[in-house]
Image (cartoon, rainbow, N blue to C red; front, side):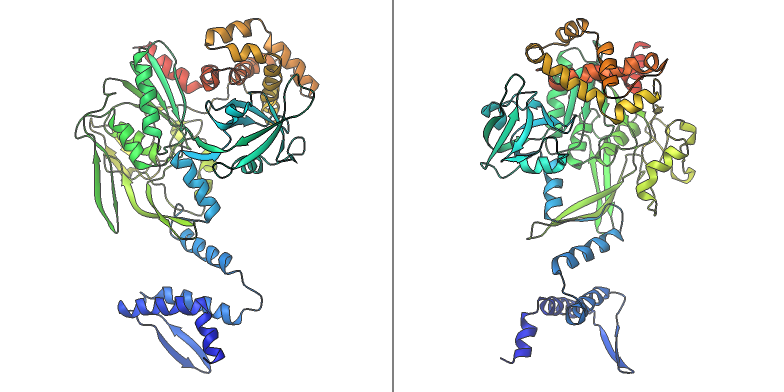
Length: 537
C-alpha cells in the first residue's frame, strides 16, 4: 500500500469527512469546489455548512504550525457551536457531566459526611447515619487533618479538591486522619467508600401549629418521594397550610416538578405544556388524585428560582391554587434533552420551550448581558421595589380566575418581598465576610459536644442556650479576631447574629438541619410575612 494512501487512511479527520460527505450526498446536499486564481474556494449550499467545519478541521490537520490537541479542539468547537444557540444548550466534558448527573440522580460514592471549613480546617458537622464514616467511627466535630497521608489542614487547601480526595469509586478505601477534642494524637480511620444519597429536601418543619415549611434545593430524581414523605408527616402533625420554599432552587427533572404540582391540583388542571420546532405540543395535566388538595399553599421564589421551580410556581399561579410570594424568578423557559457520547461526555440541547397553563413562556430574552441580568435587577432597584419590575404588556395572559400575569421574564410573585436590610450594619458585614459566626459555633460545639449529641428537641436546645450568654461570648470572640462593634451596631445586628449562631450550633446536635432552620427562619422576612398572613385569617 502506498505510504501516502496509508497516511490518509490512518487519518481520523479523513474518515469523519468521508462519512459526513456520504450523508450529505444521501440528503442531496452537495458541496461545490471551484479553482480560482490558484486558490481553492469552497462554495456551500445553505443546508451544508457542516461540511465547511470539517474542511476547516482538515486544513488545520494538514497545515497548522503547531502540534494539535484533538480532544481540546473538538471540545472547544462543540462548546462554541452550542453557545451560539441559546444560553442553556451546553457541552459537558466527562468530569462536568459526572458532576451534573450526580446532583440530579441523587447519589454519589463517598464516605458520608457533611463538613464546614470555618478556619482553614474541615470540621465534620454531620455524619450520615448508616454511612461509611459512621461505621468507621467518625464523629461530629472531628477535624480532618490528613487524607491518605496528605496534609489538608491549615494550608488553605481548596474545598473542591478536598471533596475530590474524599470521593472515589464504590468499595475503594481512603485513610482519613482526624484531630478529635480531648485526644492528643491524630486518629487514623480507614474508610471504605460507599454510595451516599444526595437529598434535595433541606428542611421540613412546623413554623406554627398549623403552618408547615418545606425547602427544596433542587429537583432531583428523588425530590417527589422526599417531598411527599415530609409533607404527609407534617400533615399528621396538624399542617393545614404549607410554605413551599423554592428560593435558590435552580430546577432539575421536569417529571418531578409535574408530580409535585399534581398533588395540589384538580383533575384536568393544566400543569405545563411543551413545544418545539421538532417537538409537537405535549401537555401535562393533573390527575386529580393528589393528597394535598386540601392544603393552603404559599410558594416562595426569588431571582435564583429557575426551570422546574418556575414550572411549579407557574402551575400554582395560573390555576389560582395558591399564593406566590417573594421576588421575580430567574426566567428559564427552555427544555434541555440529554445526549450522551461513548467517551462519557454529553450535551444538554434545548429542544423545546415550556409554557405555563395560561400559555405564557417565561423565558427571559437572550442578550449579551444574559448572565448579568440579576445584577441589573439590583441596579435598577427591582430587589427593593415591585414597581421597578419590567413587564411587557404584549405578553399579558390571564389565569383561571381572570388575574393578569406576564410572560417573557420569569414568574412575578403575587406578594412581593424585598431584600431585607433590617439590622444590617458594617459590623454584621465584617462578621459575615470572615464567617465568624461559623467559627464561633464550631468552637462552642467543641466545648459542649456531649450535651449537643444528647439533644433531640428544640426545647432541649433552648435550655442549653438559656444557660449561655451567646451574645456576650461572641462579642469577646469577635474582638479577639479584630472585629469590634461600634456604638449602636450590636443593638441593630445582635439579634440576627445570635439567631444565626443558635442555628449553626444546632447543626452539631443530633437534630442536624431540623435544629438549624427554626432559628434561621426567624430572621427571614418572607417566612415572617407568611406567618402574619396566616394569623390574619
